[in-house]
Length: 336
Image (cartoon, rainbow, N blue to C red):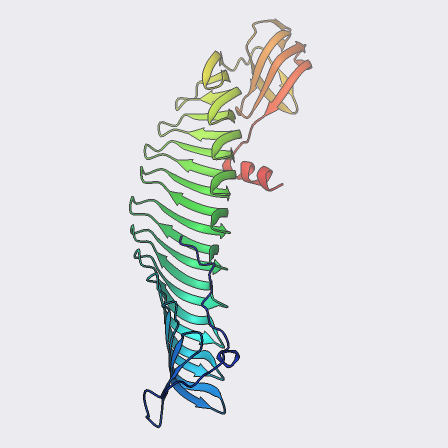
């Protein structure tokens, strides 16, 4: 977005030294005044102050045409910069304030609200490449709720802060992917959902624009994976349940599958822990109760036991890892 830092040069004209070199026009309504600094003014002075319709020419090349009140632009007017920018809209005692439009020489254009020379409030910005933004502005920056569209088809609708995606938003990529969730400094960060055109869906945590943390992935064939992600790759232990119900305990390292164990229910060998029953990868049983060492997955597929030691159907040693049972549970944990 072009810089808007430079304000309109609208000095209180009574501060200038008016030297009446000549009266070019002798109209009863307006006179042309030549100033000592080289500026030229066409208008009417009442009690020494410019009032009503005025045309002001700066010696540097800028020009104003519009309404004055008490020596300052006030009301509707147009300001023309030497560099090609044009503002058309309302002024309040010397500054662009209220509804107006600002056009740059490269074709960029803003239409909306101004406050003290800044784009401030609701407005529409159209870039020369066809990109558009419609929403809230604060001091010349996109800030608040807005929608951004690109010629490529990419679209963002959500919250902005200081010209960046920040907070909740909905981003549709040009390749068809869709992200709904939290942003920070233009990046996916926090809880969100990413959907591919193929129907694959990731629901979980993001960090610095990458999948990172606990998550659930869904495939169209009914396969569901619960596990950890890091740097946009599967990383650590996870549970895969295919569309037919088959369960595997998997271990991933930087996106590479380290090992996979099939897990099946064995009603003749029971393992109970935390009030739930588990699939156990060992055939060791004593009186129908799991005994020995190994890994386990809960019947629901939402918990795993890694490096477990079991005695008579009870866990006595090992790490229990809990995974989200649903999208809602992920969201609740991220909010908490």
